[in-house]
Length: 373
Image (cartoon, rainbow, N blue to C red; front, side, top):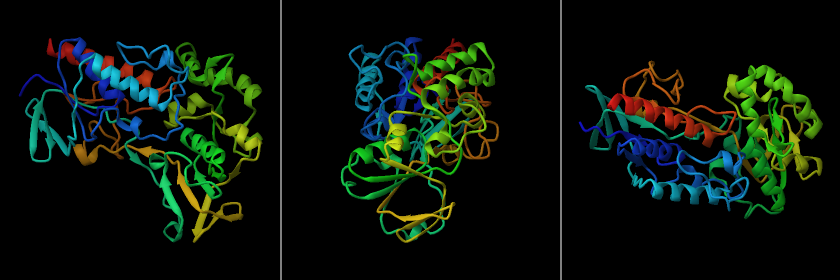
């Protein structure tokens, strides 16, 4: 066994951990099943822009370039990750799918098909967007039109003149609904439960920067302090035909692991009648989708913006010391509960995922470097 750590994932989180380890004198092996580094950023929908500002989105050791947009685009993030890997001379082994990992003596054995590599430190950095989560809806198999998850949506090409139902009301759902409406589709969004919505900025400050209030106040107090200002800026969810939430946005993130919708234009589209709000889906009969309020409509396509789930059990097996009953890491950014096993960026953050990746990458690298000293 060598002293070389192994990082699984060559997206932003994996590159951040690799850079921090290299700055400390270690040369990790980065593995990724994709053919190009950058993870899902190369495959997200075209319209995607960060909800965190450029100044709060850089990874350890390299700020985002000043000529980028204030809220960088998907293409700019991809360009940044390419430059980041070049700066720190991170050369991932691509096309290398990890099929399993198990404890081997004082370290870990990583399986790539028939090949086995041993390491004292195994860091998973495949992130929160692991497995597209699709709802089990009665009658979905009978729908004759196009169905796809937001992970497979790119742009509105081919949707002009069609009636499209977007299921969900997270950030991807909002972006995709606006994209489809601007592309000439007739768009409804099906929203089954209460939602928190936030403006992109308050007083010219990115809304994600207000997560720092949590450092000063308990999160319920931070929610209470910002709620009146948010209402003045954009109103209540019920003003848009949505259900008002029982808790504030920080409480939702911390207690439920669910990110509020940050408005990038969907609220104006709802007010303008370009996007219509529907309640949850009761069932599907062919082209017709019936909703829980008894109404129904025919659709040509359904886009499921219903998020992702994490499950490390196909690789690690059932490890109750480190994984919950659904296979999600219990700890992200620190000691996992088993020596030599680490997870980076598997929990959502109020301050933005890229910023959280940097925090966790530094913490993991510092801990490994101390153990290797």
